[in-house]
Length: 418
Image (cartoon, rainbow, N blue to C red; front, side, top):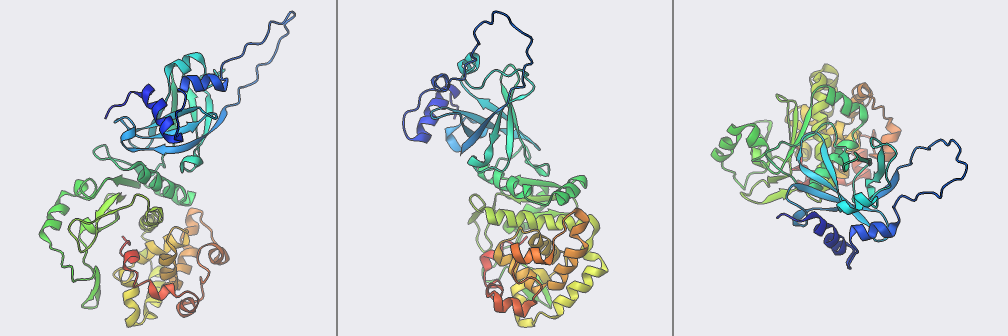
């Protein structure tokens, strides 16, 4: 649906505030953003022109759906006064950075009512605090002399292929999760060429990258009586198909792929959608990033980690293996999960499970792996902010935190592992 932008601005503002709102041009004039010229000076003296301080404004809402023009993913509503609004349009065409356009009534621009006229068109005329719209950070609106432009700062690891689309809420959740990764980890992964690709669904991600995967899925029927993870001939086997996987780290392409939607295991068409599930999205981002850290130096194949992992494995009774079966099928999975937990990116249940069952592996990684990327975290800090029972051992952890025992039963939680 195409929407006339001048009409959209007045009608959408009215819709948001729940009452009729004056047009942006009228609101702008009421805000008094016109340039005021001082009275003539009889004996003018040489004066230094002070640089103009940019306005500081707030994003109040993120508007998506059929209320905005087709070529935009979202509008960020920016409040400029009691009854004044303008919008930053987040365009659909995107690669590593979203190009945004301020949407306003051209008469406001001509009259100087949207922003004061800058002394230097290359400098920002407004600094937007994005917290009000549920977005981390700030960004600047620049007057080019012909219109307003802004770059919304998408994380440098993130990419969206041109053949797909995603919910703006999901885009922002992924971006926010990437932004809270330790900076040194982000920089190391970026230098190594890692990309985090998001797409609408499995067809636009896994099948698009690997067409043969679709044929594999179609040729393998799901037995709903089978658990998604089970021990067969002393080996833990994942019975899910590609279409059931919520996220992948693809070592051959050095790429993390996290579709917005996948199909729940044991069903043919029940869609699991990430929109509105930030904790799940963040846990997935951190787990897959943990794989990325592993592949920087193949840490899970080094003897020091193998020794710690084997010592932890030996202390897991056979009757308790089910609780962490996914992390016993190979060493790369516990490495990724432990890294995610130590960086504070997992849900409480997943954090408790992995750190209780693999204490030696976790301590090895805390001391010898994560510091290589500037993430130096003490055991005391982990206890205070991430996992209170860190270092107590599994039995002590179970006594203090019954969720460790329940974790294996929480299929909805553990099935979200990747």
